[in-house]
Picture 1 (cartoon, rainbow, N blue to C red):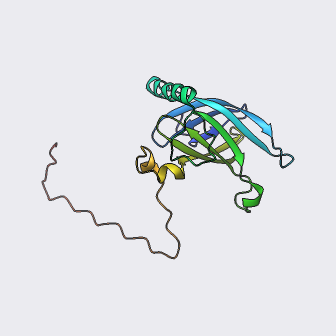
Picture 2: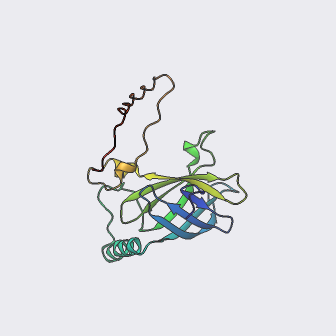
Picture 3: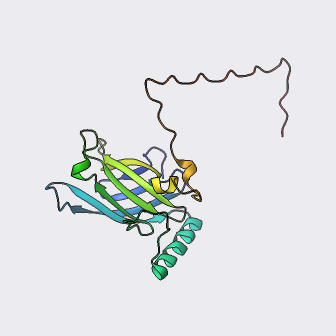
Length: 181
């Protein structure tokens, strides 16, 4: 997948590409469904497939275990209906909408690494239908054994808090030669 696209991109033909912060890339095809709650709104669903053979194998093992046992990890939220590599993007519920998030779509993707949250919205670009980003699910971040919690983005500093000054760099001594480790 090209680095020119955002981490989550849905093209006008509803093909999608997903690049996780861990570097794994997925492709898939989404289906668009009309909302049962609000006329004119849509939600999307589809299945993803990894681009690299090792990730395909790991995801296939996850799907096989899920199909055999039907179990989700205990740290997933109680209402979770996540299935391996199934992406469902829904609008934020009407009761929780604000002016800023009215057009936002939210979904979860469960792969062999863990549970990821996808946040997206309609794109202004004519070559993209929907674009967004991917972060570890809040349930992953709260789980001590998570393999993906280190990909949680750094919190944004508030305007009223001063940013710490960067540490000064040491100047190289004249004539110093760097040595390999």
